[in-house]
Image (cartoon, rainbow, N blue to C red; front, side, top):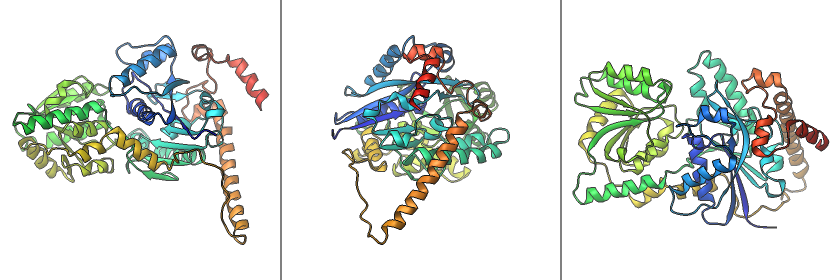
Length: 475
């Protein structure tokens, strides 16, 4: 038996959608495959043309999965200093306008052949499994690791009847992660507590940001002026992403922050309202369209202000620290990982926010040490992932429990009971997720139990009717 491990990374989004669940799993795949001792497959959603037009920016669309695959490989190769050796596969997906998310269609475990199914990494395991109807993950893969990216409960609580929805969603997330995953990694304590979970930030930053940080350090050491601009914030321009908190703080303390200039960069559903609110302040608040944080435009800013408390681990905060900037953020569980860095200034109340902002504008950032820079890198994040997931370097062999004869029957009975309960829970979930009326009642895109004719044609799958016959024969 081969000792090489195969990682299949399933995620809920793909480039060119610049969202965390598209970018971070891509870097994870590249760095897991870097040493060449692992086989890695990144499994991403394929959307039909009309969904691509809704999701992807700047009128970017793909006529074929091969074209999309080439785009993704080119994007990552431009940002790392080695040639990644992972492969890409696609599962059929549909975009939900109501959820603003891509949802899987059909049984996406079929993307990986049984003979190579080893370790499955489910990026957003709750999202991937809310409507999962197909092969049981734990039966197909030796180990199933879920990585929780999103604080869904915080988002739904802001909606109409949010508390009721959050209560149901909390139960649903617990249910599907318990029955389909062996281990859950929560990026921070800002996420929902889930069965068999640990808290560990397994994300790094694009190496380009670390290179900017090294450049700024050399400029400071040479006595040059490394930063020519003041404060800024970048993020999707929706109120829940920290814009409400930031503008409220700036409005309340305008008299103490006289002379402060803040540039806001983002695009989103609330852009017009954010612009109007900023105009009403006496401070100089400039609102700009969203841009890539790697744009050289951002290199000159010294202070990154991020009051958001809905993130799990804010990628832009990590990127700002990597670039050598001072970061001002709230004392919140989502920022716990960043407290180890001297340039991260944490405030507990509004008065501290004002004082830290004024101090940051008048001070120079502390230089990052090599050890601190490493902690922000994808090399360190990959090592943290391997350790948190409890993954052995070689394919595990079957073992017998070394219990005494007296304890063995009781142990087996307990284990059998737990397995029977989990089997019953899986059966119930499969029964509910197999009914169109139930799926739609709980928010699924209609007619997504199986991929439609267009998706089958794009991905080279058997037509819907033939797929149903094939499944019937297999059962």
